[in-house]
Image (cartoon, rainbow, N blue to C red; front, side, top):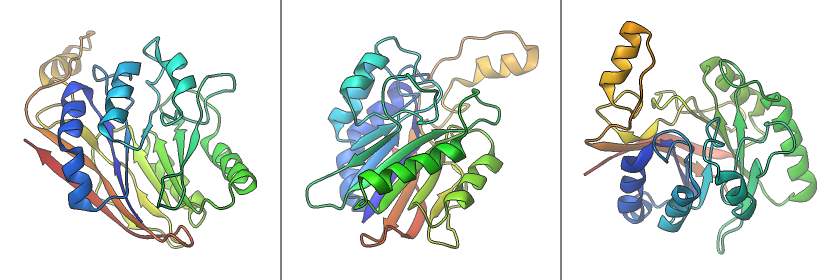
Length: 263
């Protein structure tokens, strides 16, 4: 099975490029499923209900998110209605939405997608390692037929991402990092068959600072004064990872960084 997992979609430029090229990308990569992290898809920070509907309507199979998912007031109620948008499972109990979803697509094996949030330099949430253990236990009990399991680990620290990769090696198909918007060059198969990549990168403007206009960010670095950040314009690149996964045992057979320069 071939799965393309896209990094953080940033603002309108990222959404527009994904919508415009998604069908061609699915054809050229042979991807059975295309999944994306969309937590910065609305204004470069957060995700609105309209933004989520736009991306799902364009043909993305599932959306993951992260620490900015609660910015828009319409998101909690939307998340109750739309199961194909998931949020980090290790937020404290009581919040709307789910941290795992099983995609059951006609003609394809089922695929479980889990979303976790890191704690190092991030929001104080529940332990992602222990949460991952609980999610896997639930899957074994409730959906034992699901052997393909993907983890979007939305985290800042590379050490925490690598740690979760080794912790879950052999128990999930892939651990893929998001959040830092810079595609890393360490895509690899771990010893027990789990695909790993520290960060998928972003789907957003190339001439930018993590998708945002450069000048205000430079001023903030130089002066330490508050600045209003805005999504940059110009050429857009879509980044992620292309996975090859064995349908029978859920082990990854290959992972490669993926990039598409949109026109």
